[in-house]
Image (cartoon, rainbow, N blue to C red):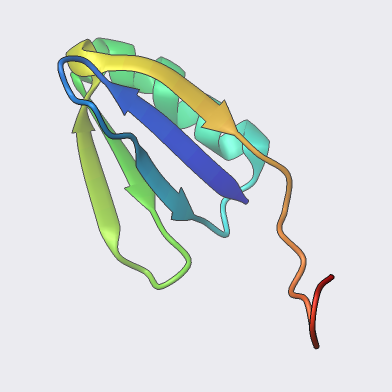
Length: 72
């Protein structure tokens, strides 16, 4: 699953692949509004912590499929 997070006052987005489902990511974001910190885990098991007060948007993409060969 591809996840993009916009952060306030930052020209770049946080973008990473995760094995979490879209429902799990949505729950993390809504729960972070109370706790103040959103905790994500990427596909390499790295932990990403984001201050929920600074999140401007969260885009949850479709699962990426691995491509083999050349793409034209």
